[in-house]
Amino acid sequence: MKKLLTLILIGILAFGLVSCGSGSGSNAKIGDVKITAPEGMVESSETKDKEASTKRVWQTADPTTDPTNIVYMMNEEKVTGFDDMNEKEYEKLLKEQYKTANYAVDDIEFKEFDKTKVDGFDAWKIKMAYSLNGLKLTQLQILIKGDKMATYTFTTVGENDWMDKFEKAVKTIDVIEAK
Image (cartoon, rainbow, N blue to C red; front, side, top):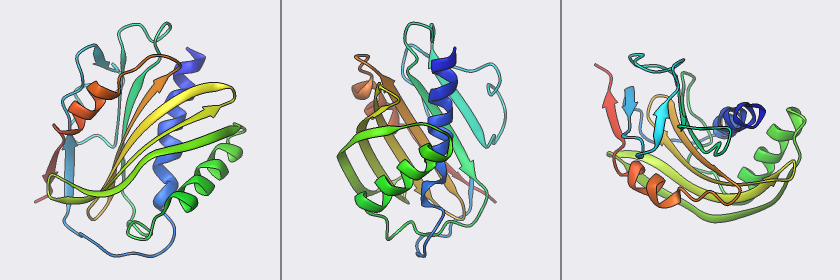
């Protein structure tokens, strides 16, 4: 359970990484963002069935043996720094966030760091691997910009490999504009 809580914290910490700096982009109003989670993932009972929730968590059926998870967060604050983000800056912010939470992050390797579009919205797709307090993690983050930031953080732990399933889930993201 401690591993699962750590991994949920990872998603939350990573969520705040692009809240500094300056930038421009889409100001379309985001009402909600939906996804079809991969088979084998279940939504946490704490976040399930909440309309337009600002936080959702999916986990494997047995998180004690496979703590792989998906964390969705919606930042209600104005998004800045989005367009100017780069790997070096992102790595620095990631390390600072973890240090603040007393975690040691090492050996960050970016596999992808690309601007893209998700359902017509400006987005970043970031895939990285690193060690957190000795625990090997691989993450896929999708940062979606509108009037606020929606973030999906997909995390695999150790040798568990869900990335193909996560990539398919990303293709199901549906951004619902606020009215």
